[in-house]
Amino acid sequence: MAQSSISEFTREFVRQTDIEVCPATVGKALKKAGIRRVRPARHAGTRAAAQSAAPQRYGLAV
Image (cartoon, rainbow, N blue to C red):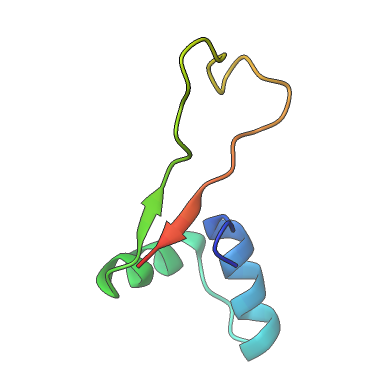
């Protein structure tokens, strides 16, 4: 799940544990564990994420 969003992590956590949590709580826990968001590298001449048809994905790194 290295390229998963916070919402995807939250859904998977709920599925595996049957404990309801807020995505913000999951984000705080990941940050406290030292896991940070990583944005994909941008290349010169590419369009901004707001202009592209597909939403940008974020990965999480240790």
